[in-house]
Length: 98
Image (tube, rainbow, N blue to C red; front, side):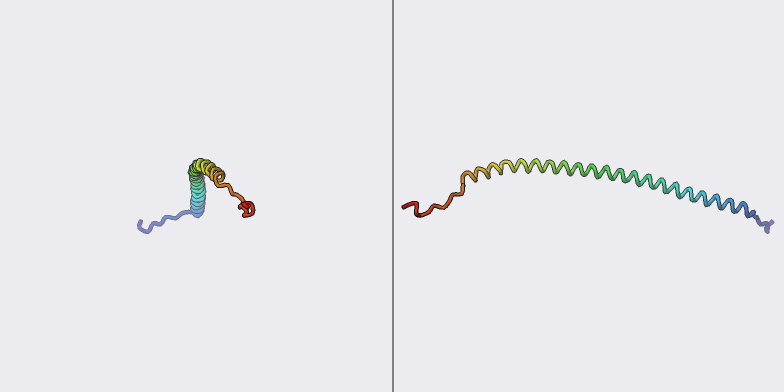
């Protein structure tokens, strides 16, 4: 029985190849769908991180704005005081002293 050769009918070969191709296509579509869902989850996580960082930056800007306002008030007061002390005066004409 050394020379025994297995033969397969052409119909069975075609059916097996068709099933293999359909299985491969379904596996590719399934993997693609899973990958898409994973990418969507990653994008959602990235969006949440971005929102958290943006909120942190906005809070820091508000804090700095408050500090600037706290510095501006005394500076405005000092500016008014200096303007009151050093009011510009018109030059005195020499004819008025005669």
